[in-house]
Image (cartoon, rainbow, N blue to C red; front, top):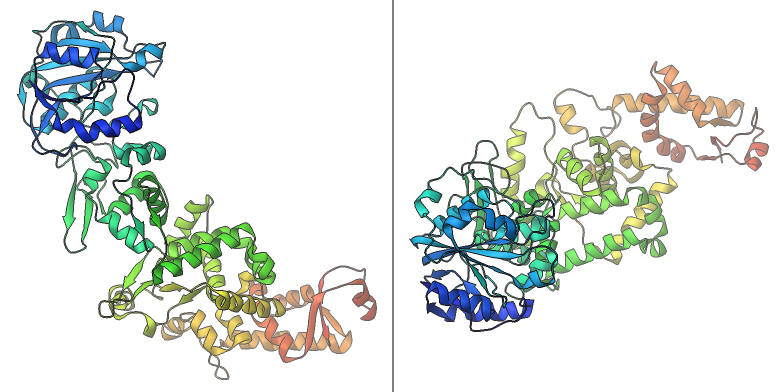
Length: 615
């Protein structure tokens, strides 16, 4: 028979460094050898073997084979509740009828449980990798205690120095009986305790064995990228099948769900210049690149999380040296300063105004960099996001581990837009092809009131962060809470241009469909808002003329009675007009102090309610 037999002799299990050396040289040592001599070389001299002969000198399970006529089962018995010992082996009729020999591994000498391998000679030479895979699957069903990660043509089988135990040199394993037997084709996840560097890469990722995979891949995929876009392009250009060491064959058993009939395959898309994974099953269809595949397979929440994992296991880095890379690096630093509280020292007003929403802001910023737009003519690259609020709420909630309602997500986005942490692009600023692809179909949908927004994160630097801080100062001066941010409030404080920029779809779609009417006196305000303002001013002035002050809680209660509605309904509407009234009429609004209580001769018992009075 013909096998690859390393010329390196070992007296103990090879280290990671020694394994790399063996892997690099073993394919240059193809030998024609008898089964008896092979057993001797393997179990007395501690040599390492690869049992298949390949068509080319590439140690990969995807390399086609010329032939293989030997298979082995590995029993390391790390699952103490499900062992298969040497005593069990000696009582097992199948092994006694079909196996040739077994030997104890290097690890057995230092173990309290039996660790050994069993060798089977096939009754004919197998020339297809898929057949070898089918043989192993049948054996794994028969012996679930065996390590299911060894069923690869490229598997390295370490030897021993404890000699072999003969069963019968003439025994042969009947291929046809095994291959035609009914086997349930499902993905079998190995016992976590049995995982090592021979385990398929996608399983190492599934079990978070990043250190093991990092050592296994070594520097084979190591790259220093100038930005995350370059990194994404590189990983999407890798053959997913080979890099992740997915199940053999095409189609193969889908790794995303259990199935009996193979439905998954990997193909190269020339249109997108990337490898795509596709599952054709009706129950669980999927198509996507390696980033989207691992988002779903690993259960992480964004492509950036997957990218961090791939950078780690491939020993790669990003130096952020490109223009777009520097933009993302500055965003990363801002998010870090926000999380650690470092931002508080330089911009205390900004930090305290948004600190309640730091987890949501950081997660939202992360998702803002998920989509990259490249101008087809100029080649300019921009981060443009068009996540819907519903989708963002779901993803951000998953990322930070708590439920995020639609309203909460809308509030966070409004805050980020108003303080100009992100820009909401107007229709004329959205790239034409993006507009045609996303916005135009929504505009043509008569049942849709508003279209999606397209967001672009700002370039974080001293000037933009100072601008955020200045905006927050003005909001605080006008007693604006985060939950009250709206078109009307921003218009009343900052003017029409900023209101239209931050909330471009606030009223226009509703006016066009006849749902609301704007005031003839001010086209930026609704009739109801104008009327509410008039009523509020009247109530305030009446109280100021008689008492010199009015408690804000009393004002809100009076407005609710006047409009025949609930306090909870009228309060947010009042908040939108409050700052404008205070500024227009030169009023002061603050929480009552004992000095103010005495100065204004406030009736009743002292309390720390908010009071409005004339300067």
